[in-house]
Image (cartoon, rainbow, N blue to C red; front, side, top):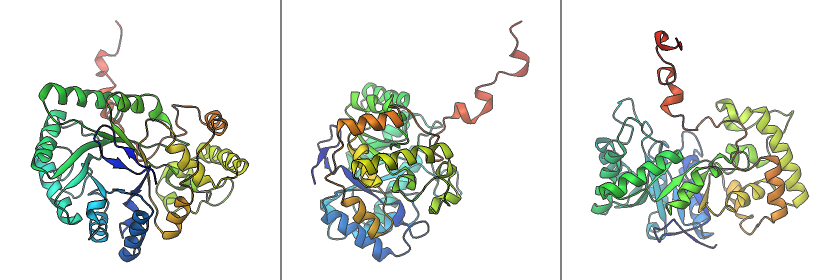
Length: 340
């Protein structure tokens, strides 16, 4: 396994990261012992980055148990800001919640520090200076080594960098956006912005939430576990694109999963792609493709199917800014809508 520097942090991480969402017993692998074995095999293969979140059920606890005796060899990342309870203050990026949430995560992970602490989704209700101030204190206390974001628009990335510089605060060192053969929108602004500020990028969903595993075919029953609750997994336009990628992978002599992962880590702005295996066989398949390098011809043909900087459909988990969620932010009062 070769390693890449995570932005300008000096931290070395593997091009494949291990996502821990599927280790939560309520939504993924129901056997914590099996999840631990998957984690150990990934570490033995050279993967040194594990990414989880406080909103992933009992994932942090399972990761913490699996890392006993191996913690020092792992770059451990987790997240805060998604709701974890009914209390309206048990979410977001306020100082009040961050200071509570980090202690909860440290306890569940069984560690005294978090290598990368990320804001899971932007929190428009909280001033970014408030968030950065709290995170800076965590870095200065030694509880957190570096801080990052997830699914943050390019304009917010730039604003956060400016605020950090002007206020003398620690700055976000990483961004974790969605990226795959089907979702390339971040190539337009997010990746260039991250590169401009020397941020590492950990991309999630490189297998299209299961669409790029080869299991989903046009005209067949969709057997994916997520098909029942994620609309984009049943999107006809996405499935049509998948069919074209399946043909391309066959011509290249590659499994579709290997094509998808090799694509995700080929962009110079991508540091690591976070894979999310639920079973050992899932991990084995992905590890078998670590040596795959896509030629310029293959990458050109991928561009012809899904052009650079574009998305096929919209992910259900995509961040939607308030300007699109609230009609009052895009409609003047009725009495002010005329030109006369």
